[in-house]
Structure formats: structure tokens, C-alpha cells
Length: 463
Image 1 (cartoon, helix red, strand yellow):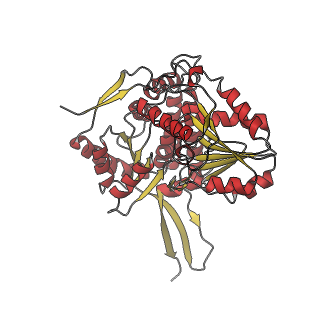
Image 2 (cartoon, helix red, strand yellow):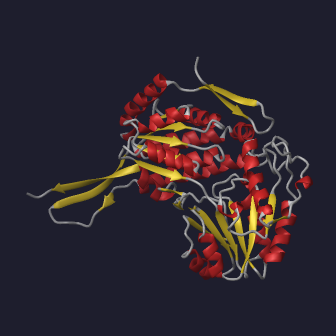
Image 3 (cartoon, one colour):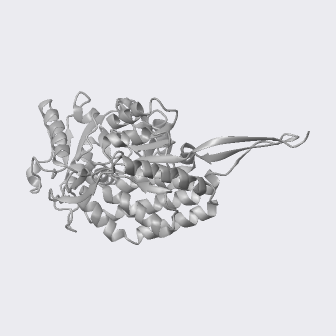
């Protein structure tokens, strides 16, 4: 009897999805189909690839309501917010489809008499995409769509928390007329996922997940000369300068910290505020945080849902408790949120002050609804604290001075630097991280470089 995948919904603890896990024969068959299908797919004209993938996006978006409801039940995002993931998927997918011809165009070389020289961007082959649950479409689309546009076949392994997302991809792509075998998904165990990426028929791995997961991928690939793109953890900081628009900064940073119950790799996890604004900022931040409604995410009036599982919520509660023991002050009483229940995924948002970098909550990824706010006296102090981290995915400054924003950003160790914005991916910009936030790049024309290999053509035309 096949081993089973069971998705436990954070909404009510019920089993929402059950699927058999792929066995060795199913994995072997999928790889054989992918290799065969990719040969014809890479020869498919660019315009035809664009047409097929555009139809797939259309088919996906047409089922927005059903997809949003599935998201809510699989990972707990409020139904009032879940449709935003479909909109984000559409924005990124359409951008990468449109950008493909210029990103994949031959690279021209300066003329040389008697020779024709150019560089082609050639598909890698079969790309394995290992995707997480927290933004299951917004993470996977970064690799799935451009990998296909570049002429690769794709095998998608989605989180056991969000298996229906992989199936929705397959449904939309089949409806659009994608040839069989070019895209496939497999529900697999961790052990079989490791075996898959070690197979010689896999030519690239795109992984989004934890730092330990990234280490496991790296170890698994240690005997192979293939690339692996990794988006890993984050402890993303924000710096509110003395000249910031206070109300605007509060509104956007509350959302940046607590959207998706804080379960975002690029969500705000620590805030440094200039001493001249600190008290007013904290007051406004707490006031706005108290307006959230924590509850059943299937209720249209709920705007703050459960975390993905009780153990994740307990981890964050532990960080908060440790910080308070070390001298931090909690500004939110969980009793203000009646749905908050220890031992369940339902956890109220929390704001801490009098924190410092000796506390786990300011240095260890929380991935949950807690924020620490520290007072700083200068740009130099803020930069030093922002850089005092093993992570570097995104960081932001809140200011009315664009020149200062660039000057500060030049000193911050991060993959993306924002001014007056946070927790957003612009598909026209390279999505990348430094330090333990990963390596490689997705999105933008630069992202295509990681899904292709350069092939040089050196033709002597005069002999």
C-alpha cells in the first residue's frame, strides 16, 4: 500500500487533502517523460511557448475563487486576502513570459573581420522545483514559468502542506495545450526528493525553504556539477529615519510585519526607529496592530489567520517568552485577541520593545507574528544593527530623502533594498539574497541566466 500524504488544515485541524506519495516507479517514469519531452519543447518556437504559457495563466486566473479557498484551507491565510496570491502569480508570470524574448536573445559580439561570433542561451534540460507552503504560488512561479519559457522541462515537488497547488499548475498547463511531460509534479517523501535531485537527469534545482533545507540540498548535490538556486531564511530589517512620514511608515510596516501572520521570508522582523520618532512610532504601531481580527480564516471579516501549525506558533511564543525574561516589554496582551489559544496555531500579533541583539527574537528567524522595535540615534547605528545578522534577503529605509536612502542602502548587506516599501517582489528586479538568505537569482531578465547555459558560436566565414 502506498505511503500517504496528509495535509492537516490549520483552520480546524482536519485532514484537508490526502494523496499517495510517488513510488520509485512513478519517479522513474516522470524523469523519463521529462527528458524525452524536453527535446521537442526546447525546439518549440519562442512565440509558441509564449502563447501556451499565456493561455495557462488565463486558465489559472479563471479559477481564482476556488484557488483562493483552497489556499485558505491548506495554509490558513484569510479568505479576504487569499485572492491576492493569484493576482501576484499573474503579475509575475505575465512579466516573465513577456520578458523571455529579450532575456533569451542571442548575445551579439563586436564585429571581427572574417568571423561571425555570438552567444546563445541554451536550455539546461530538466529543472526540479522544490517549493514551500507559505506563498505556494508566489514562490514557485518565480522558477516554474521562466524555466518553461527557457525551454526546460519542469518537475515540481510542492510542500505537503499545499499539494493542491502543484495540481493546479498541471491543470492549467494541460488546459493550455502544453505537451505531455514538459511539466509534471510529484508528491514525494523527503528521501525520494533527495534521490530525485541526485539523479543525473536533473540539470538544475530551484529550492525555496529553510536554511537547514538549503544545507540538505547542497549536501545532496555535492557530487554533481549542476546549479542550485536557493531562497532561504530572512530576518528582514526596517529603519525609520528621523525624516520619515510617520503615519505612512506605521501603516506599511504593520502590514509588512504581520501579513500572512508573519509567515513571509521577506516580511519585516525587526525595526530600528530614530530616537526622535521612536515613542510616537511605537504608539501608532501598537494602536494599528490592535485593530486586527484574529479568527477563522474562512470568515470574510477575519484579517489575521492562524499560523500553519501549532508547533510553529509555539516556537514564536517561546521567542517572546525568552525576550521578556531577558528584559523586553510586551505591548500586546494576547487576551485582547479572544481567538488566541496556546497550543493551537491561533496566535495574536505581538510587539516588543526594550529589545536588543542578545535576544533570539532579534537575531533568529521568527517566521511568525512578532516584531521587535529598537531605538537608534543615527544612520551608522542603524546600518550596524541591520548588518548584524546571518541573513540578507531584503531591508528597507523609511525616509523622504532619496539620496540618503541610496547612501544607506549602499552599506546594507541585502539582496533587495527598499525605500518606503517592504515585503514585495517586483518581477522586473532580480530576486536574490546574501549570506544565509541563499544564492542565485530568480525573476527579471537576470533570472533567466540561471535557467540557461551560455553556448558560444565561433564561425570562420572567410578562409
